[in-house]
Length: 72
Image (tube, rainbow, N blue to C red):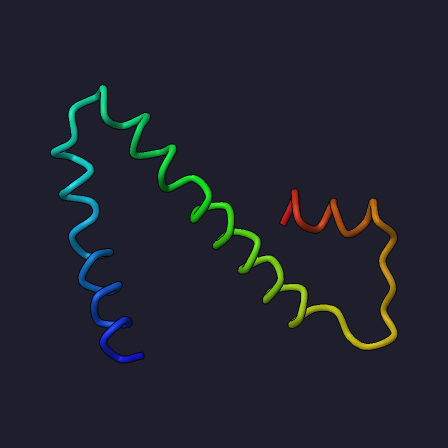
């Protein structure tokens, strides 16, 4: 796991420079590739936040849960 962690850290350090080097035509293709990961990480963060804030016995309606996800 440490090898994967170090590779991801190295990639995230290099990512801003790599994005700046992309031509404008390639930005949409890059976003198409990265969009699922971006949304997955957003949802993962929302689930971790919910674990910290919601205690056993707390109940949310579907609308309340969606509101928590969309408007943090």
